[in-house]
Image (tube, rainbow, N blue to C red; front, side):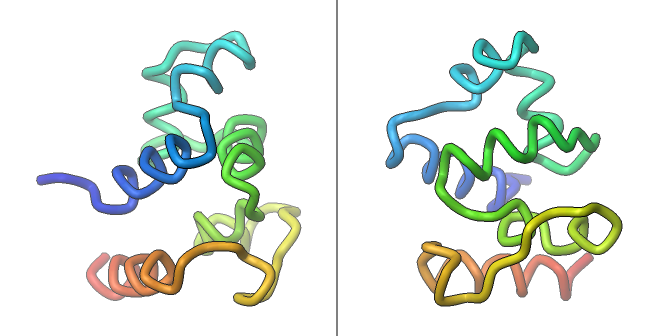
Length: 97
């Protein structure tokens, strides 16, 4: 099964001229490590911040469930710079988990 949120993150990175591989190189970790964090299988504040920063949003906008237990900056919907469909996918995925 394709992880919609993961594919969306990769697409948003492409739109912003970045990729999981570029983030991995910049942080000195493998692309696989960045992908595992992006998919939510593991947590890394440093990688989550890098992914969100490359897209131009707060980590809490990409991973709202993670922001509850971390000191992530939060932003309102209007500040998120995410298309509304992105937020709808996030909401939909949370209800199916």
